[in-house]
Length: 125
Image (tube, rainbow, N blue to C red):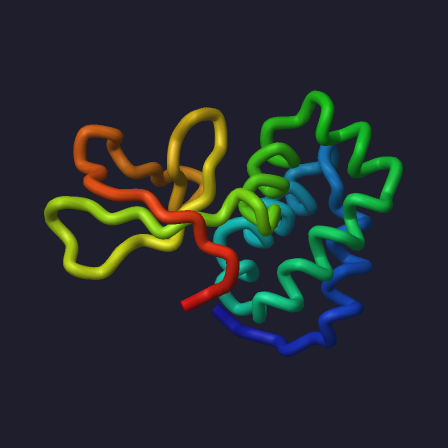
């Protein structure tokens, strides 16, 4: 895949234009915000993106009914970040709480019976 670097503010403006529900190409970008671009951001950028979108009326409406928006919200919400320890891994997973499960990506959660310890994560390790 070809990669392009863009300014954080350009990324945030693009995110606003892709708030669900949107056509498939915009939906894919929105999902990439949750799974790919989140990992590339600093903690400050994640918090800024979260605050920025929470001021947007389209985002607020989408958050009421759209699962992709709810997942994005949980991923970026600083209050929803956890370090999850499992019996089979030495290092904890950086996860977010959504719908009663600890998620690593939109399609990957940690099985409850594998979890041995959960700690609130206020900032990245």
